[in-house]
Length: 208
Image 1: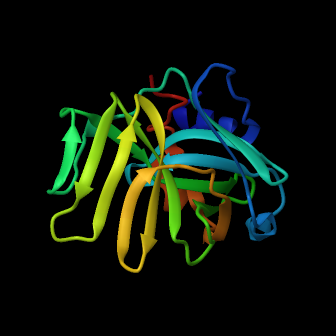
Image 2: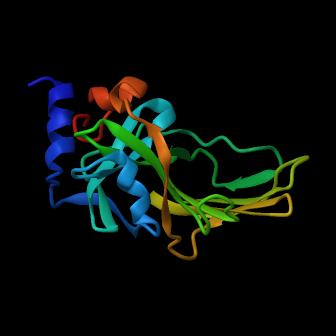
C-alpha cells in the first residue's frame, strides 16, 4: 500500500495508537457551522499547513475532539527565529509551529479551518502550539513594533496565546483553554488544494 493510500485509510478510520507524546482536546463552540462540510464522519487535523505537514488527527464526536500526535514523531525543528529586541535564553533552541487546525470530511473532500480564540471573527486572543527541543525563555519587545514576548517554551509542545488589544500584541504562555470555532468552508477539493498535506509524504503517521 502506498503512502497516499495509507493516509486515506487513516483519515477514513482514525484509529489511533494508545502511545502518544502529545494530545490536544477541545470542544467546538459552534458545531452547527460544520454542516456545510457535508454528511459523514469529520476529522480534526493538526497541521503545519505552510509546509504541508500532517502532525496529528482525531475524530470529531459531537462537538468534542481529541487530536493525537504519535509518540514516534519528531517534528522537523528549525533554529528559533525571533525579532530584534527580544532576549532568548538560552540560545540554540530549535522549534516548530503547528499553526493550523483543519476540520476535514474525507467522504465529501471538504475542509474548513478551526481557530482557537475568544471570538470566531474578531478575536483578541488566539492560540496555537509550538514544539521546542529544550526549555527556552523569550522576553522583551520587538524593535520598532508593539509586539511583546513573555513566553517560556518547554521541551515538547507548549500552548501559546497571542493577545491583541489596541494595536498592542503580547505573545505568552496559554493560561486558559480557549474555545474552538469552525470557519467557513476553505475548500471543497481539499486533496487538490493541499496536495502535499494529503499525499502522505509529510505525515507524523508515516514518517519516523
